[in-house]
Amino acid sequence: MNIILVVFDTLRKDCVGVYGSPPWGKVHTPHLDAFARESLVMTQTFPESLPTLPARRALYTGQRVYPFHNANYRLKGDFFGAAGWGPIPEEQATLAEILHDAGYRTALVSDLYHMFKPSKNYWRGFDEWLFLRGKETDRYRSGPRPIQAEIDYWLPKAWQSKNEVDYIEKSLMNVRERTKEEEYFAARVFREAALWLEQNQDAEKFFLTIESFDPHEPWFVPSHYRKMYSGEEVEQEVVTSRYNYLTDADAAYVRRAQVNYSAAVTFCDRWLGHFMESLRVLGLLDNTMVVFTSDHGHCLGEGNYMGKWGYHGVPAVMDLPLFIRFPGAQHAGITSDIFVQFHDITAAILDAVGVQPAAPIDGISFLPAALAGQPWPRKHVTVGWGTTPTVITDRWWLNCKMDGTGALLYDLRDTYPFARSVARKYPEMVKSLFALAQEDARGGFPDWLLDLAKRQADAPGCSDLAARK
Image 1 (cartoon, one colour):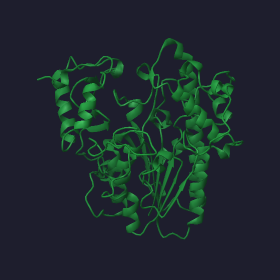
Image 2 (tube, one colour):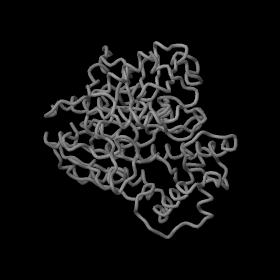
Image 3 (cartoon, helix red, strand yellow):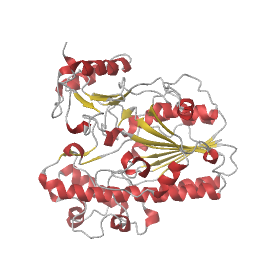
Image 4 (cartoon, one colour):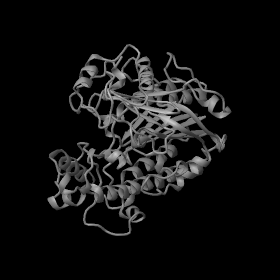
């Protein structure tokens, strides 16, 4: 059996039709919806650690990254993105290496430039890897620089800090030569992935990983996708986030960002459809398992915030889509609500093809339980993001700092659970859930992150009850 792993960056779960709709209205994903109808659909999937690189390290190895031991990376040629923002440790085998040793031909097609920066090694184990240049601030083009009018069109003047201007300026330089849809990033990623399939039809079995940085910002998409959500042309586009709490003056900008994000999701959906059609034409749908997920979502007004955040973590960022289409659409129509994290996906892939890793991994294959509707040992998940673990159960959602302060507790049975924290109402539950975060932090929390947590400001509306006796 062949294996294809597809990862979109920053795809909100509620923007995929089978899961519902975001607060601002339906997003059109006909190809993902068709894919879901032929798949095992998981409804409670969460990353193991965040953001981008820690999430993929867990997915690529099956090993936990939280609580970020030996993960204070300060590497030349890159910024400090977060705890764990570094390479895969040399002593950890990657899924590509494990499958390569089991006789699979392995390949990676990606435009996710963070994976290819100096010192990064996320291509380890792949027989072939293709890096499509130019996303975001990738040092792909040095000029010509956009004029101020171009910057003003894509970035509201009120948001034009030096960092944001540099970001948009570099992003525009990198994509200046595009003239048609096929040259946009998600289109290039899935066209190249389809081409790889054509060129490797002699492979006895293969493992192909496809990483699309879209629909991550900046949300540059062909204009006809924006017209699907807003027929009017505007003088001010918004293709990035403020990464801050919003003011009343930001309301119109947020609405336009929602249009552009929705357009980016539909654009991604269209080119995933192209790839799935290539699988059909090549006769691969009956002997290939396709796994589809996203690393995290994105806030577009939830909690009066725009961007992604770990403190406090919310479903718009941490609750992820996961579909597994088995060969011949076997098990289509099954939905499972058991708790799954990224390192479990690694274990599930290995389980599906009967490959045992040389060394134990932390992930657990959820496939037998999900397909049979059986009980599952994991009753909670802990998601790590820097100094702030998030603990989630069927009823409760806790976010706090590693030193136990700044607790935010949400009762998922409430009609609007994230409207207010109930940490002060349920202090014993806060302590109980924080104890789970401590238990999952094998070896304890690193001193450097504990020190950072002490200096980190509390989130609005939090309680310090988690740390009190």
